[in-house]
Image (tube, rainbow, N blue to C red; front, side, top):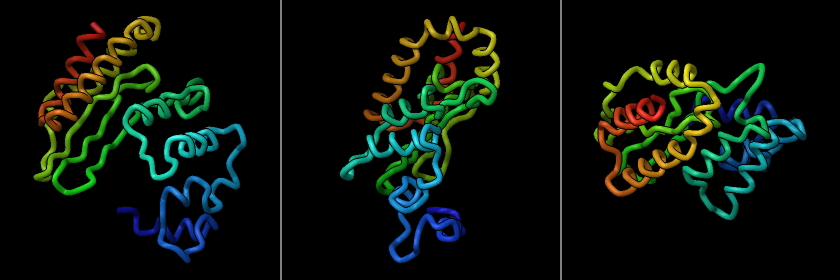
Length: 190
């Protein structure tokens, strides 16, 4: 599953020679030549280091590792300052067709201080409920609350994520899980 011109682009940039099957991880993490142009201290190089740390010897990173990477401000992956990250997503894709994909969204700016909330794409092709208060409401509410108060809520946000992860692992993603998570986030902010 990739854009029809991705392999062509990688080959034209010299990141992949086309002799072996296209492997996105190898090509984009520098096992080809893509990393040759990365800034030694830049966010791309930091991303490469994280990939090498978490994806070694066939090991797969899980939700917690990906959240840690996407929340990392020191590396610049979670951008702050003049240009800021405006949200973040972690996708957990099924290994077989018997499960639905679950995509975790912050639905607010600054992933370093925002909880991820699961949205279900169901096995029958349907999507979970989207009747939750508009995600713009969580964005605006979190901005009004301010970073200082949000800092004091981090333990609550982590507990919320942990409970949602446990629920998804135990029962799968219910169609209303996103609504429930957005409502919980707003409740914590109030």
